[in-house]
Amino acid sequence: MTAPPLLLGIETSCDDTAAAVLQGHDLHSNVVSSQHDVHAQYGGIVPELASRNHERYIGPVVRQALEDAGASPVDIDGVAVTRGPGLPGALLVGLSFAKAFASACSCPVVGVNHLKGHLYSTHVTAPGPEVPFVSLIVSGGHTQLVHVKPNHTYTVLGQTRDDAAGEAFDKVAQLLNLGYPGGPEVDRLAQQGDPAFHAFPRSKFDDLSFSFSGLKTSVLYFLRDIPEDEREVFIKQYRADICASFQQAVIDVLVDAVRRAVAQTGVRHATVVGGVSANSGLRAALSRFQEDANVRIHLPERRFCMDNAAMIAAAARASWGSTLPEPNLDIDPRLSLS
Ligand code: KG4
Ligand code: ZN
Image (cartoon, rainbow, N blue to C red):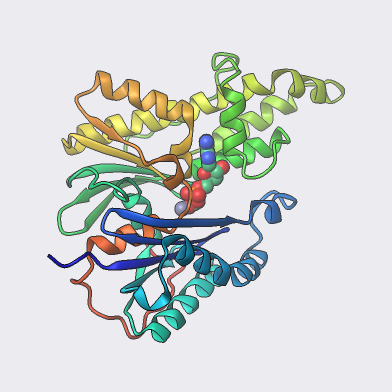
């Protein structure tokens, strides 16, 4: 039996420069260089800075991934690189590097949809659930419910009408002076807080769409209602409770959406992926939900929740050998799933 191809994954769609070496379900290396500190002082991602930092780190990150894998460039059978959606300049750095690498090593390069990468984050080191299943992608840039069907067909069942769930975490964290990205810190504080401290609104629509901008604004108004001279002390005293109450509202909305998507499609398996799927409160709520409902929830390992290149290689592995070479492979910053 021939060995599965040795794939080099490259991911630069946002503010993480990442490379990984994957062979079948054996992950030989997984390197992520995060630029969070660079963007923290601006409270969000500055596209120009992101591209410049990708340019600086892509070489060392790929070298590290090869070294960790004990592989030399000529061992690589193919390169999988994110071609969209994402920041144009950031995507261009990854794609240009991937093309140059593939050309130098005489191997093919394939473009991968970043969202498809997240969908495969539950399949990196193990086969993962078989299609059909429903997947909730919850990250800093996306909140989408997808029906994953045979032959790599995807139906978007619903998506956010405004902010992504991770964006709401980041913006609320900013209101509470918790730094960027705020999700991990809100998660940490929420574990010490009371989710019933304040009832923030849960948006719900007849279809499977989402909205998080109202929730974020209600946290803003809640804080604005505190007299200005008392606000700082109030935030300090109740920060954990505010985080827990806000996070509970997000969790209720997300779990309810998974419940309805499963009922609508009749599937028995669901995955929840993307940066927000690292949230401990959400993971606990989903595990309680699967005990009550007749459905199995699959979550990525925490190291595959946030952007990484292992999931990009895993997505390419799924259709390796059946995709035609793309001589004019280009970035598509607005690439969608369906
Ligand atoms: O998937 P990802 O790395 O990038 C995008 O594709 O957008 O997701 C990043 C997002 C950020 O908004 C970050 O605050 C959020 O995921 N995040 C979390 C947690 N860890 C990361 N949100 C809630 N709880 C967490 N533990
Ligand atoms: Zn992502």
